[in-house]
Amino acid sequence: MKIFLLLSFLIVVTPQQAQKFTVDPDELKQPLAFKELTEPGLHAVSITRRFSGEREGKLLSTAEATYPPREEVLKCMRPLRPGEKEPTEPVLWSCGKSDGTHLPFAITKGAVAYFIKHSDALRRGEIQSRYLQRTSFSYEADISRRESYRVGDAAHRDVYVVTMRLGWHQTCGEVPDMCSMILEKSRKIVLDKNGLILAVEGDGAPMPLFT
Image 1: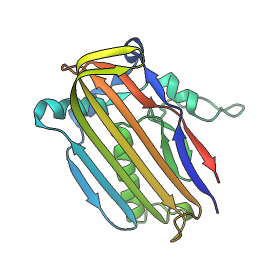
Image 2: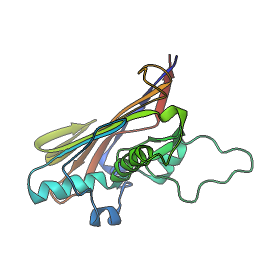
Image 3: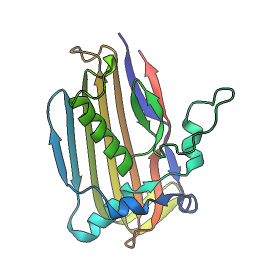
Image 4: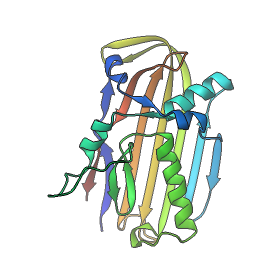
């Protein structure tokens, strides 16, 4: 029996470091188009995105389209084998795969879309893996306006804070604690009213614990 509990080394980004983050323009043009999504069954999906009005919707979509620096993501991937080349197009929210599933360095629209498609492919039988007999994916996001919000030593005033939470559970059979992988991750992004990224919390490489 083994349980994989994936935790993260949390990275707190200062305003100067936040300038290194990029907002994907294509994802801004095609953001997640729903507030809620529910798919029950062996490969369940549950998504809730909370926001009020057009401004908050755009700011939430901006946060979801915010990607960490490429070099930070590459650092979290497994070391290259002798003669192996660095991937030309790495998945810029992922540290690689474990038992057939990507492990997110950061929660982004791309990560959410991947887990939705991953669950759909499993539901249709397009993916066959003994580790993926049952799965569940959850994503929650909300946005709130704050008069003041502190990240490390920096205090930000009159800002919006987007909080994202992602959960994934996969198991090889009916018994929940038998050859299972459990992933829980969160991310916070602080933006001004114009959508400028001021700070990011929660990005980091998942660390598997075996028991």
